[in-house]
Length: 467
Image 1: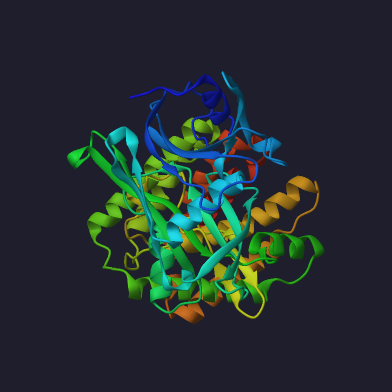
Image 2: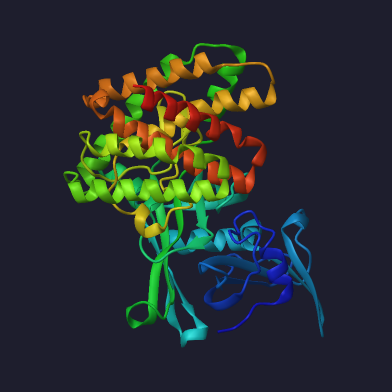
């Protein structure tokens, strides 16, 4: 294996998508592939290479790092500059690929043209292959830009036109920064919803799959999704922004909350019809409850004050295990207000089906309990109230959040026909489990927000044990 240059290591550890913050990295470049600039470049030749870089620190994680090299600076891309190197024939400017139009165009063309790219480090073995869905037929690229604000991935928004110049819907390509062996749930579930005829998710345009060296896999190779292209919905807001504004203004939000509950039920119905589901067995319940117990111990290690609830949570888990459980099916897995868009004339549209970033990809791809999604959205309404309490000390919108939570559940029940009340103990356990996940996240990333999940855990545990 090959190490990476010092300049690249220094740059990687400061990126939002790098998950190894707080520990010393041990990087190896295990391969990758080159892309051709399909249209040339007026500023001179552009070299485009996608590096696959393995970090051996603690739990190994593989990163996808596209870089471009230019002989002249790319105008307006100063923030995307990785390094400037002096070579014998002059300086070379190295850029983060998604911010370079040459890479952005080459990536999407590889997918739309169903092209292939090989890895010269492995005697030309196939490294990447594009796949286009019918919605991607005839699309031409006119411009690109990187979408800001993401943490675990990088998304490129493209302005497009059909061959002949007719207007076309804009598309967005999500570049998966952390790679995992196996299919990415975001691709699988979004495609399944489209196949089921559901408009709950954006239309699928195409995806890029790849393979890379992995000594722990048969034949020494692993494979998975590298990028995913779908319909982009511009000039719309996610439910978090809409709900936060309504809460801040004291506006009733129960109607949209009820509709969001109905959309969630439709999402679960469509996924259950398109992908396998099965009855939950006693062994499944034992495994899920065990996972919840492990989550608690991990959270208590990060936030020692949570250890006070160890005995009370034993009762919560016993009650949940003894209650009726719905069937196992594929679910969203990381459902919250930021994952739904308010689209005029279309209603709520759901995004980002990758699942919780802290859960292993193999676990995220398994059938799960739909109550996990319901609990995630209930927690998100609570986060609206918590964020207002943090930013506006002395103000409480907890009644607003409670009304939204009830309306969401009512909408879900009405659309699904499922009586969530008979699963109340299970739903409570999932909501506490989600709050424990939040506590770990906040302790690591936003300590000032830690009180939101810890206060919720206190409230939920007291409610459950008092009933």
